[in-house]
Picture 1: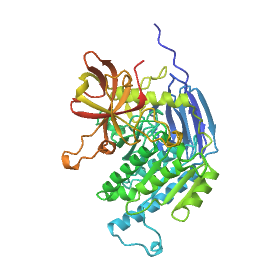
Picture 2: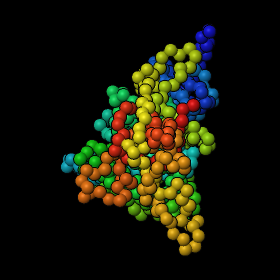
Picture 3: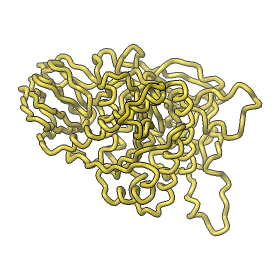
Picture 4: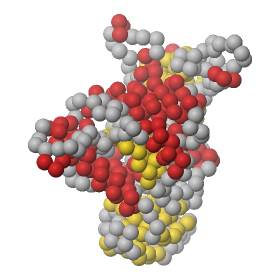
Length: 490
């Protein structure tokens, strides 16, 4: 069989402060090479002369401040725009950088210049809000990438409280991680980079060790009490870390939120409670000092009215390149993420392209070989938080009370025909407190995630089940929690 003919590379010459936007169809990939000049993708600098690969229906933009020449294989959709909000984002970055410098000076007890005596010295703690299709995650990446590119040793934390994305872990989690180096963009399945648990630890693009909690669902309204508790757990852990990490404390944090925090009437109790939970959870010695609203005038006015007396509320425009994503696309991205967790994410080379980098690493370094293990039903304790079919409180009959609370861990019997475990994603939890006197009923809710499993087969007569995991390990005596996510190999 003859080799596919290489597409003739297409060259674009971009003027200053313009960007080349592209979108990929399913099953396609694109290779982009910076031929001349300087360019970046969401703050991540492209290396001149090196081929950068993109796949898995990626939608992104190559931006240049001073102009550049790029070369690429043919994408599905492409165009150039000179109308971008990058100046606004850069100005916000400069303001955050000044806050970091002042905060580090205060933490170290360094002298304060006379002209800055009256200025506040709190590190930047930013809550980013915006409706669907506003580009909140892209703004987070840009601000984090600009911070680490300053060469000052900043390690800003990104906190992802959007369970439909999962951040660095599988979908269904909320998580946080210090950003040690620029975050690449190559696939929508890893919007904030990859975690060290899903690839060899030697890879620089996979050096993140996120702190993650299992929520288990895509929608925050599915179990708002559990969501509130997970957010506060993250906040407690990060505040403890900041006490030991002055550089990280001064670097600050960026909280990326789901659209459900921003859409709906101002009287929406659900979203107001979750916004308040975020602001209270990550305050430590200094409260949240800024809310950034992306592209939504009404939401900006609402936040000004509610929090304007306590902190700064800033509205920034959304990019015209933001693509509206439907539900089926989001489901596919979640499946890409789960497949990548098990096998690694390797982008198929476009015709005629013989080498390239994905997320800063060579393709042959990103392959994984997951382990399939047969275990006894009794080896692994599996729980579900609350009732799977739980109706909202206001939908219950008048005077009726729940038999299972939203926060109650319920044991799942794999032998039950209605267990829902086949093809289910399980979050493997860290061990509970060794001191029996420190144990409590809802301890499961406060345990972090150590990894994920997928149940690929259940043999009820033999009381055994088969689980797939990235690494071979023993699961005897361990605890896992199941949510609504499923995955199976096609």
